[in-house]
Image (tube, rainbow, N blue to C red):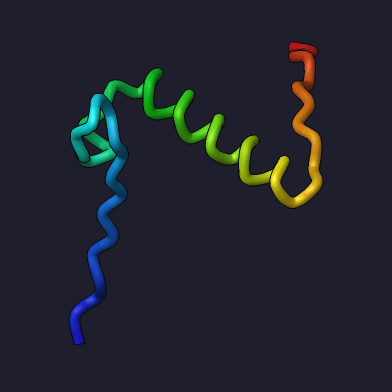
Length: 53
């Protein structure tokens, strides 16, 4: 049996593109917003840590 290939798609400007082909800064921002929104839906609050180094 072959190992499955996982392809992560992201929708930008109403067009689905491979996440690896998206500009990294846009992809990171969209993923972070999605995680924060999902956490808020189940009752968690997102906070940012200040960098110490």
